[in-house]
Image (cartoon, rainbow over all chains, first blue to last red; front, side, top):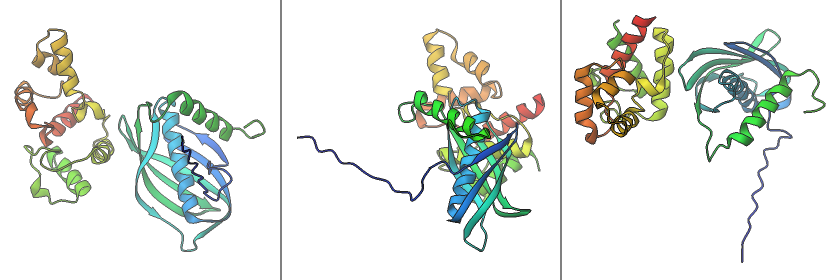
Length: 153
Length: 123
């Protein structure tokens, strides 16, 4: 008899991609935005982590698996709820062949509310991180986030 | 500060240890217990401070054993092959490394200094 156990993960979110748009991508910068609806601050930190990871993928031509290794420091607002449209900015501070350090910040209006230093690493795709699936997925999401219209995303 | 002093400062901060525990002869992994995440932090710190390109595979001698295997398979002189692939290491250091392989990871602080010196010179 085969026992099949199904594990359901409920993040409380409709979508794991916590970015609405990537409006600008350069050699050392990336800018995006996200609209929050009374969401906890940790989702803002996750948005920043995702923004930085997409810049690492962009820099490496989506040829490697990129992941957040460490948050060296992060300041968060005293008011622990995010509401409204936030501008997300990332600046590549330093890098090696397989490590990337970013200053990432989320702000509303002209006030920065979350700011931190995030360290990413890249590894080759392999058995754990399937290149065929993940590379296509991240390319597609990145492309969608750069478009004004999300109708076919 | 010179290159050794800068690297000592960086390592001491990443590993949360005192500077006097670090010398050119210190083995990063054997003596200090450096882990892969520490090496990645070290790599970006070196890039930031010295404004040099840092190739993690080279500076941390990650392909050392692969190079030795390749030299053996191709019947090449091991030291010569290593010198071609790790040009920042002196012949004397490469001899030490090849004689020391069985003791474990051979990366020393002096190897980092040699790498940074070479990269700074090339820049």
